[in-house]
Length: 155
Image (cartoon, rainbow, N blue to C red; front, side, top):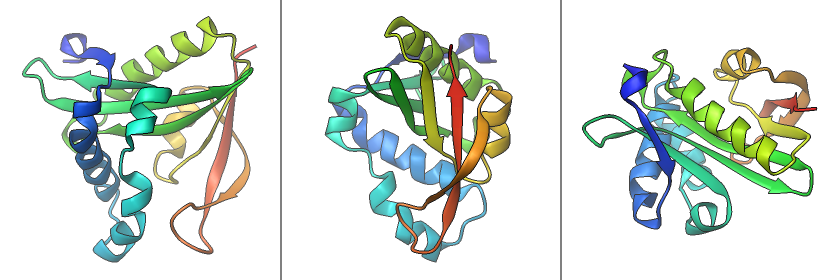
């Protein structure tokens, strides 16, 4: 039940758990091992992401990490950098709860726009959260692959 989910800031000692979550969630979209190998470095959570960005974790009542989301910002523009939900928790409102934390923070620091390069499987979720697709961006992992470029206007 998502009302039992708690949202907290990520800590440096969460890095490996977060990396495992990102990989598990990405793999659940049906990507094969060759594809996942190409994504490994891009999905590996970095200490700087935790120490310098706004990075939140969704925890189940038993303390298990079931989702994460990360926002970087510069001036009045933000970028949704990381957003993953444990495959067993997809469709249960975890992503929505994480997105609420992100939106609240974005508004509190005066962001006018949040952009993101979405995994094609996640594009419908982001559309439900109010993002609109504005074009295509090159993949950071796979040469020749493009991703939906999306934006959310907060003004």
